[in-house]
Length: 250
Picture 1: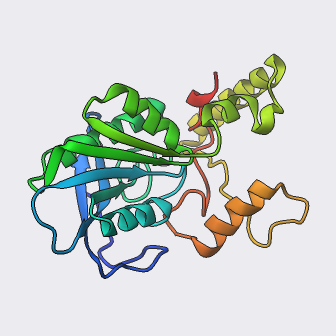
Picture 2 (picture 1 turned 30 degrees about the vertical axis):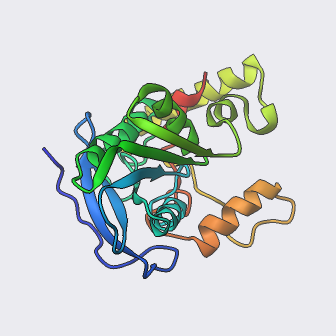
């Protein structure tokens, strides 16, 4: 049974609306019973069944940011596309909020293929996926699992599991550092349980970013706290559930 969600109907993306495609909100569910919300973009004046593409990412972003821009651009080029919010984030359902799970988020992608495959204006033999930044890892998982996917594009700059386990540039690539990280996160579980709430890990830095911040931190913050700020984006605001990324640590 689908969850009852309150969807925003007006255009609230961080990019301009195209006059070359039709847009609407759609919902579908994954096999964990979570209702996912997506923006669908369909080229105007098309004929026959269309090739379709499911887009998601970056990690901590929402469909009103990069994934929606990718989806709209691909629709202008003749594809039917959806950009969806993963479970526990954005307009999609799932509790507790702001959790990350490789298993559930891989299933989110597969559920999007289920949905696209049943649309009357989609050719189910021509479905592809795009995974942006951290969601590229989920896209790779799906590409290895799902034979219905005929094309995959992974647009990412690093291995998210490796970064979570070893730190940026492998600066924490040692047993003591990983053990300490796990110890701190497990201590946070107790605090969260006692408080009855989940502490957030923090999003990107507020602007202006300090001059001595690493270049990639400046890039993240300028995008999520600046030109692509969105009120539902985790990266633009409080970030993920603090222990939400623990499953990525090996």
